Amino acid sequence: MDSLAFELTELLALLMIATAVAVLVKYIRLPYTIALVLVGLFVGMVRLLPEVPLTEEIIFYLILPPLLFEGALNMDIQHIKNNFRPISLLAIAGVLISTLTVGYLMSYLIAIPLAIALLFGAMITPTDPVSVLAAFKALGVPKRLSTIVEGESILNDGTGVVLFGILFEMVRGSGLDLIDGAITFLVVVIGGAAIGFILGYVGYKILGYIDDHLIEVTITLILAFSVFIIAETLKVSGVIAVVMAGLIIGNYGKYLSMSPTTRVTLITFWGFLVFIVNSIVFLLIGLDIHLDKLIVYWKPIVMAVVVVLIERALSVYPLVNLSNIKSKLKIPFQWQHVIFWGGLHGTIPVALALGLGDVPYRDLLASMTFGVVLFSLVVQGLSMEFFIKRSSLVRKEEKQLEYEELMGKAIAVKAARKELEKMVEEGLIAHVIAEELNVQFEKETEELSKKIAALIGEDGLLRKEMDMIARRRILQAEKSALNDAVVKGLISEEVARKIIERIDVELAEEL
Image 1 (cartoon, rainbow, N blue to C red):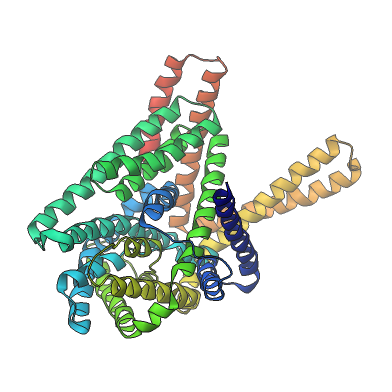
Image 2: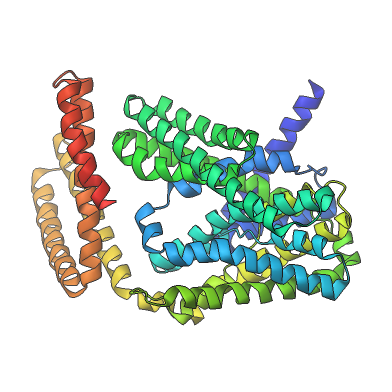
């Protein structure tokens, strides 16, 4: 009991620190995850808390599934399809180029065996877009750029972990065999995608027969963890399996099998869970980085940072320009700079470093990994906002931002009118005052409607996107109404199923 109470006290202390940091960063404009790492470093140096070791099992089986599932849950599969060429090139070819570049350069620079250096290359390849995407959201960066950065990160988490696992086994005994490694890579990746698709589809179908938001959200939680465990048990990629399942639930289950109430509960629950998980893991990363070891290995760490930046450049610029060939939607050169500098490294490299076990040069590899992660999160993360502003990406989306501002005002006016009606019904305001305010609201609504119509008329792409969103929402509302009618006994399941099948076809076309 004493041990349990002690562990709970540590957890509460971590959550209290994370909450204090979350409040503080709202005033000092520092990315939340970076602030957590810095605070974790400080807490570790002054020994305010005992060290809470992050183990490979904790990160892979408790931390990664919710982070990956929530990321995939909120990704639009249509946006991924539209940008599949650059995302797949960066996440697959980019991982291979990065591993080889880092491996050969580090083997030459610090005189370690090539197999060990390649292992480090695979370990440091996965990227973490949490801080970058937060900056994107705050500055109004184009959605397509956010999709490319997030899509690459989610997919290269899987490919990087698979490649690391293959090299890890080779280093520990079987030796380097490129052909066997390539076959294993394909089997593990495809197998993980297949498991994720099957279980995600089953989960999506099960959700369609349930109309209870608490049960449905619980099913998604079970799915996120069980998909990972089943895939890893079958010796395929649990990371890719979770991503695939999350994409299916997020793009089909969320809209075709859930009521509006369930969707709101789902988004709120997963947002809260990821906030808690991210808060703890980034604090623990700071706590677990031993500055004394970083000082001992400072020379190879500096070399590793430089080499990782070189490999990022060699991965991003050639591959993105390759994807631009015969592409109608080319990725601008300024975007490529942001993709290059936004390749931050975080949770997964730390997890892989912690699971090295008795591998030769373990302390060196772990220290270089922690050093690169620290540089990446602090230096690149802190300069990301400046980097984006210098690239003038924000100014290019003036019409999109103007549209969002107008829509925000329209939503606010509509809410105000509803509140006014409620106040009149409850006798909280005189009718004469309500009428005067209502006239003012009607005038504002009319002006906003004219401005929105003019803006959409000027921008064809904006009009097309808004039309697609409207059609999708309408079809989702029809599906939700039919499910509610079945629950209330107004129509039979057979009739509803026939209509829903036609709606599903239309929704699939919109998706």
